[in-house]
Image (cartoon, rainbow, N blue to C red; front, top):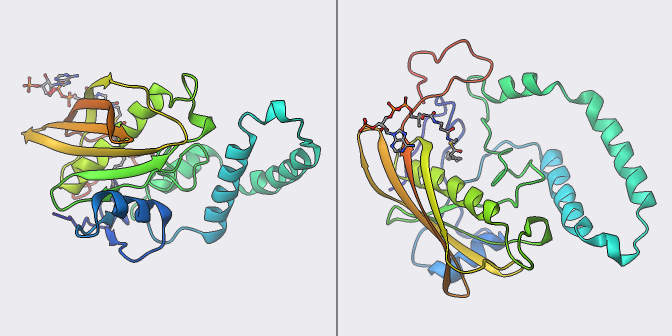
Length: 254
Ligand SMILES: CCCCCCCCCCCCCC(=O)SCCNC(=O)CCNC(=O)[C@H](O)C(C)(C)COP(=O)(O)OP(=O)(O)OC[C@H]1O[C@@H](n2cnc3c(N)ncnc32)[C@H](O)[C@@H]1OP(=O)(O)O
């Protein structure tokens, strides 16, 4: 059921699907434990060609993010850390083109799009967990993640908006996995039981049906074998203008 998308397609630019069996990624290892080793997971998040230094910066930022959340009551001395971070920002900021320029660059023909920087799966985005999605032969996609303190809503629980965000993102991958694409038009969510922090969350999304431009999708979050969240959405196939381009060129419709 995998779909090899064209590098000419800006939405999917660089979006070839890479089999990742055999890698030592902890999220993949977890996914295989949960869904078994007989399916052939395909990593839907992977995008080749990222700058290894940028990946590393992202990783260190996430370590800091997780270490800093809730640290105020611990008596930690953060003066040196603050100084080092100021120096890091002073190094990076002058080299970074303004955001409109970077946005247009992302969506240039053959550009990377937003997959490395989106707020759910983007390894270059410090607010992203980041979530990795895997495609299954039955047409569904899944992800497993354990969220920490930065994503807390109710005491000890995942913020409901975070659950909604992650499932909306997975809907996008569920569409992609079966060769569809759209924008969320209508989204319903039921929070059945509290979703715990610091425990593995198993997420699944799939396209239930589609007709013309309408795509109906469903998704769940389970933890400890119990249903926590279920969601349904209607996606509508639609194009949005690409930042930095005057118009969608023929053959480049998304
Ligand atoms: C490896 C690569 C991976 C890539 C994967 C991506 C990963 C990341 C993915 C992240 C993904 C994250 C996802 C995001 O974050 S998407 C961002 C959030 N969504 C939006 O911003 C969408 C905003 N809305 C719009 O742009 C328009 O309203 C759209 C385009 C949706 C429709 O406006 P358009 O003018 O084009 O169409 P139409 O109005 O003629 O309607 C057409 C038909 O649809 C029916 N309809 C419309 N709306 C609704 C509604 N609310 N409930 C029920 N039905 C509705 C309507 O009745 C009609 O039906 P019918 O009368 O023909 O029967």
